[in-house]
Each structure stands twice: as C-alpha cells, then as structure tokens.
Image 1 (tube, rainbow, N blue to C red):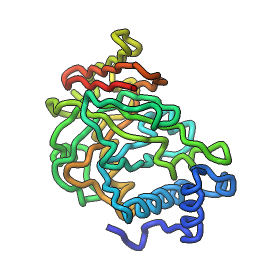
Image 2 (image 1 turned 45 degrees about the vertical axis):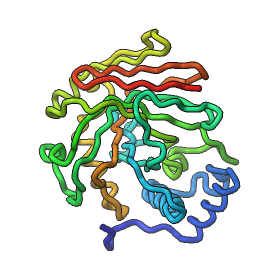
Image 3 (image 1 turned 45 degrees about the horizontal axis):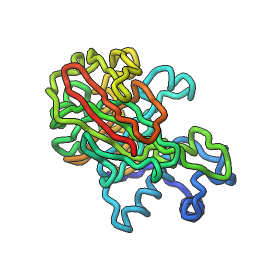
Length: 261
C-alpha cells in the first residue's frame, strides 16, 4: 500500500538504530530530540522489517494516544501504532515470566480480532466493524526497555510504545460502537479489585481508533490483516510482581486472565 506520500527515513539512520538496538540500546543518545512522529514510525517500520527478515510474523497492533488527555499532552491529533510479534499474542490464562520482561507492567485494553483485510485507508467508523471478527477482554504487556538516553515520546514510538505483548480472552459479542464504549471494566490482582471504570471515560470510541490506525498504517505502507489482533488504549496500567494473578472483566464482553511468574 505504499505510495508517493509514504514517509521515508534516511536508511543510514535506520541502520544506526538497528545497530544500537542489537547492542541493547533501545533509546540511543544520538537519536534523542532529532526525529518527529513520521520519522519515528518509519524507524519502527525499519525495526519491523528487520525482524521480519529473520522470521518474525506480525500478530497484532496497538493504537496509541487514544485519549484526549494524552493527545493534549503531545499537542497533536495523532494515533501512532506499535506492532506486536505473533509469538507474543497470548491466550487468556497464559503465564508470563517477569524474568524475561524488564519492568513488566500490565494494562486492561479492549482487543479486536480482524476478520478480513482492511485495504481502504478511508474506511469510516460505521463500516469498520464489518471487518472485525470479534472483540475480547484484553491485557497489554509492557516492557521498560532501556537505552543510553531517557526516551522522549518519539523515541518510544520507534520501540512500539513499550509494548511487549497482548493477552486476549474468549470472543465476546460484537454489537456496536456505543455498546463497546459503555462496557464497564474491572481489574483485579490476586482477587482484589484495583480498578473499575467505564470505557468511554478513558479512551475514544473504539471504531474511531480502529479507523485512525488503518489510516496511519496506510501512510507507512502497511495494513490490518485477517487474524491480527488490535488493542485500542489503556483503561489502567499496573506494575506486576511474580505470583500475581490478574483478571480483567469487561461487561458484555468477557474476561481475560494472566499469571506472572
């Protein structure tokens, strides 16, 4: 889906970032303050292409800045994306080793399974759910990766906005945008409720977020594919510790569980 309007980044910068990441430096000092959002996303695509060349398959995507407060903080009406490797798209009840994920934190997020490819960058919110097979309760797993500089927002975009993986629950009933926004979400750790809230109080209309993701992916020569899973913004983010059993309960949709070891 690439075209003449697809942003490009200097290949030398991409290769330098890949070399830094290979050395464990996800946020190199030389990059801090030197890139904008389009460049950051194109650098992320360079990371994706590098991993794909070594066998990685994309299993899903996250949509960033899906609350008005987060966009006001950035000062831009944007929805950056982050790719999720297929091997890190996990079923509910999975065990995640904190020893393998630095500074693991967990977020409750709605998770959509794409039913058919979306190749229309101008798709509208009233039509996008036609391409969605199901909605599930979900968790996003985040990793606090490190670098030689404190990352700014654009540096984090190159690094998939801290995403490590997704946990998804059983398919729930996919009704309409209003019903999704009205879902009440609770989050519990080891049987103790730590969060309760309604979707619309925390994130945008999910159909709008899906459309903005499609639009942004198209600008960077990408698209949503059947079978991929998409998370559309956090309701709550919590630190984790070994032994934690997390449960997210989404009214009208279902539950999701994760065990931290």
